[in-house]
Image (cartoon, rainbow over all chains, first blue to last red; front, top):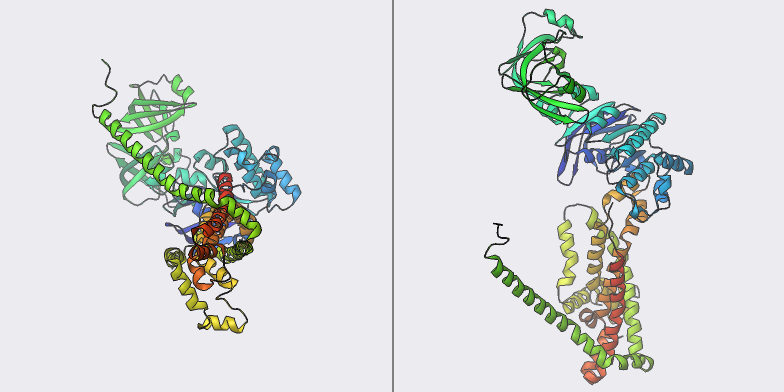
Amino acid sequence: MIECRAISSRHGSFHLTEVSFTVPTGQYGVVIGPAGSGKTTLLETIAGVVPTMSGVLLLHGHDCTTLAPEARGLGLVYQHAFLFPHLSVAANIGYGAASADVAEEVARRFGADTLAGRPVRALSGGERQLVALARAFARRPSVVLLDEPFSALDPRRRTIVRREVRTLHRAWGVTTLQVTHDFTEAGLLGDVAILLDGGRALQSGAPDDVFRRPASPYIAEFLGAENVLAGTVRVLEDKAPDWIDSDPSTIAHGNRAIEFTTGPLTLYTIGDFPVGDGYAVIRAEEIVLSLEPPSGSARNRFRGVVSELATLGALTRVTVEVEGVPLVASLTTRSAKELSLTVGTTVTASFKAMAVHLC
Amino acid sequence: MSAPLASPSAAPARGTQRVAAVLAALASSLLLLFLAVPIGKLIASGGAEGVRRLATDTELRQALWLTATTATVATLLGMAGGTPLAYLLARRDFRGRAVLSALLDLPLLIPHPVAGIALLLLLGRESAVGSVLLSAGLRVVGTPLGIVAAMLFVAAPLFISGAREAFARVDPRYEAVARTLGDSPIGAFRRITLPLSRRGLIASAVVMWARAVSEFGAIVVLTYNPKVASVLSYDRFTGFGLREALPVAAVLALLALIPLTALRTLRGADDGVSP
């Protein structure tokens, strides 16, 4: 388990400020955040190479706040690998290895065994990352800290190596914390997502929660939410309007039926949010487009005109202007073709009340 | 009609650039000649005689041997004390680092006879330290120990400065990785930082050794006799004139080629330390 309790540290002029989160034992945490948000400093603080100024760091329940890096039993992989250039590939992997057998096994798993005869300086960036991963795992650490470890790998190799990391993580019960810029990777790998910005943890939790229920409009936009609308929240007097029943969630846990007004549009949602100003976040994949008004259960339906189409491989992003408010929907390119969407097509954009997240 | 490729002011600008380039080349060539010609003339005039004298001139041989051994001892002492200091300055951010750096550079800035006088004040028989050393049977002034002290004082800052740069060139994240792989701070220094900064450290030691060999001002105040090569060449010049001083000076100039060649070889082989 990695448990950070309000840890603060300083690296040069950069400050990590009261960061708190927990990655339970054997789980996979992902740290996401813009460049310069303190992701690497966070890993270095957990590793002990950047001293903690305040707060408490627990690794598997033991207070490691002031423990030397070599006594923490963890592995650290930097984005730029930092292989020891005066040593061979094999010596790098064997450096600190639990045993020769473990070193051999991890080298084979990551495909670094085929590089053993080559000088470190002759390796490509991707090959260096493979060796760095093998070197860190060869120690059989109980905690592994990975700083964008797949960034230099080609897509095919990235998939294979990611799978191997996941396999070792599960087989050995290694608690893992990985920095990534890739939201897909975060969703694929992570049991816990930690969003970092300006040296502070803005939000942490299950990746799905963080992505679907961002704590602020800034987080929503950073996480790629296409529809972040400013408006006013009003709680409906009817605590259980008829549209509630048709949604998967009903009024429970203190949730209320809410009306959210943004410009000329009125959205309906369910939640526990104070009356007043707020933001509504709707992820593009939650919006369904149809040529005719749908017969489904979606509470929010708006007629609008397609103003922009952007095809990105298998997915197409469609911007629909609804009374001057742009709503972005994401649908498969095949669906877009089936609907014969072009700029100017009139469509209905619909989404469920539960798809609207207020923050 | 195609657009003009350059504005009308481009031609005079090119002319100015050409004149600037010619002036720069001229100034560089003159400086190069000024630096190289005297040494070349010295070696050409006295080199052959100097090498011949090595076989016959016992005092010259002894002076060269004394110079080499005292410079080597001073360099080893400088490395022993200077390496931790250089590492500290390269790696740690602490209060007073700027003051410490300035203090370490001070011996490079003061005139070397002044350095000799300062050392005399510290190590002379009248001083507290000097009398303690004397009572322990160690006489500094007028002995090879005084030569080593003078050499160490004027040349160690060069080693520290070079070693600091060599350590700074090794990214501390190499050590960080080694620490997470189980190394203690000393283990990471020995197994990672030291090998990665080896060339820079050796180059700094060579520079220090060469500087120690060429020292005159501080040595002449502390220990005129026994004579190191630089003092001998001065002694021959003042006692017997240019003719006698020339072979000794030429041999010293030739001696300087050894560390110079070593330095160039080391620097040529150094391709840096990057992740």
